[in-house]
Length: 212
Ligand code: ADP
Ligand code: ZN
Image (tube, rainbow, N blue to C red; front, top):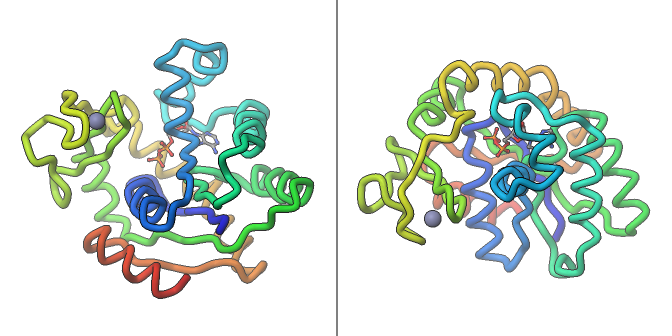
């Protein structure tokens, strides 16, 4: 199964995508996570992307599209995957359409992870991330077992640079302007499916599995 997860920053796309990937044996491809890895490693791509990611702006299309193209051509995706964080603009959606047509691997579904706006802001401003393994926590609804420590790898948790308040507001604007139009785009292709993620990720997963 090949899926896209759409939704505002803070909607819980990443958490839900990780749960579904583990449940169904899909590969979870998060473009944000790949970029953060590249930045940490200090690669050329990381250096070019750093300022955009830090300030909550979209990384230029050419960079992100070639990164995605490379990723989708790796050999580990025959069992299916979830794209999390891509596409984020109509231009990227068109690029993806062409790429998937060329690879002869059409999309199965696009999942809109839906959460009311006020909850999104609360979640983003209480989010903690593991700088080592990328796990995401939330002091409101999903705190780590031990304060400030990653459940999976025991690293110290941090606030992502782009989860600071100024940047959060900007990311939400970017979402409204660039990414929201994709909801219509995929609805017209009859690929869209909605899942409410305002309670727990486990409930959202059950709801999603019932729809897939
Ligand atoms: P969130 O969904 O919480 O905003 P992500 O981890 O998906 O966080 O993305 C973090 C940042 O990485 C974005 O703000 C942007 O700078 C960059 N990024 C990720 N995916 C894309 C993309 N498809 N196009 C452009 N920039 C991207
Ligand atoms: Zn960790």
